[in-house]
Length: 289
Picture (cartoon, rainbow, N blue to C red):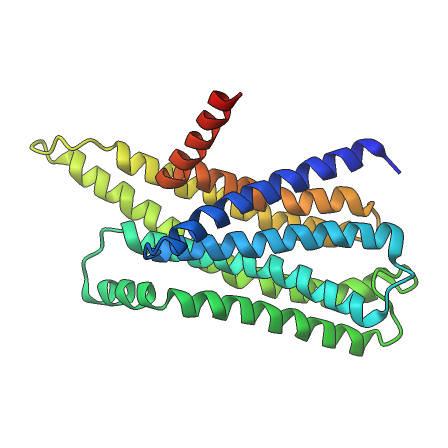
């Protein structure tokens, strides 16, 4: 066993779990204090919970594969497989919901349809969160049902079947599971960025307007970086699938957990209240030290 990879995996998991715990703890404490969570805060809280579940279960999955694969029963293996992949897909869908709600919040469209859509979705955030999680669980369960039908004697992570036979339906399910949220996410983000650029161009062309455009640039940078993280997350799902049977489980798991953590860290950095609370914790730590 490569001790360097083990050390990298431990650092990756600790960093991810700490990041998600901070987001969860901050919003949960606000909720306990009676503060009404905004739609964005509700999504961040749910995203943090789903991602910490994904990372904890991924860690358990690594130990399971390395040390206990021959001990546990098939139902437990299936349960672990469903929960890990459902958490991953839920993270993707919740990130998509976050993007749509954020875009609706800061976009400057004023037609009746847009305003109605903005109001409706903002009031249905909890239902969207629940629907995202349930959809992910149902989709992964459907995949396992199809997989067990096509390969009835195959065990999870077995190397005994034909690679093409194994990967064909898996590619189809991964492509379908990732393409729909990707289209929604990229579409809403690109539409917002284009609208902000057009609005900035209009403001610059008006010689009487001296408004500072820094806010617009920050919003464009934020959405562009989040879109990049989302695209890399989609790419890691493909990489994990492609190298599933040829690479060691530890580097695959590190790759799989990198971009959810990176995205959450960036959300902390760009969200004023989260950033200020994080800096206050660092300041208290330095004072105590």
